Length: 142
Length: 179
Image (cartoon, rainbow over all chains, first blue to last red; front, side, top):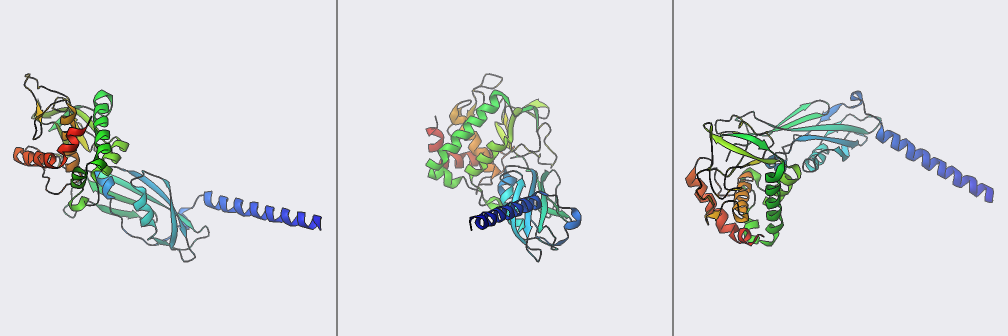
């Protein structure tokens, strides 16, 4: 009886370790561009506080997909604190074709430019599948 | 306008940082100033406290010598922004400079190059004092977040006076309480 119990415990421990290792490997492994087919996305405005404080930079988001390719969770891998919350919220509005890893990476590139525009200052441009550039104008002297 | 010897380090940068930190610490205890120093227009939702905090974290400000028409410009203490009115970038500063303080203006100096006293704001605080410095930085913060009623005032003395009045009306207690 004792031997059976020990074997059962060992089996459970082995399975748990295998599961954790597998999910860790899946989480850490690179996601190829081929695995990311964009279906839908949402524009993102330059975050207000980042704009007024002229914070620029790149934010990298890893998003978890459900079986239909909808983003169900997003976490920031890097980026400025003031830029991250809006990216996390924006990523949850994107949709991709389902993939085996059930995950994608989205890169947001925030830039303040000297360019001028009559159609407003904030612009969103997307290079599919996952590279978004958000620009805003540099402020005039006052 | 252009800037020479722009820097984001050194003793002058430390002085600016210290004054910003004092304002940031004092704002929650000064409701009138805190309630007034809030973003307007498309900056609605951004508070002066948040602005100061993020600008400090990013060190997105600096100091240097102002020049106008290639002559050293003593009359302006600080400005916010990185583009001249003609939309060209202000020579001498990086695109990430939220505001720039004049090394030869009233933030750091009690007198100009002729030995004349420099005063700052509605109460005519002596240049180089903490009160003058706080007045200048609150004024600049109000520009950055487009506080309601605050006007662009570069080379516009009348608008500058109106802005100084707003800073005094709303933040005099904070300014004069700093130590």
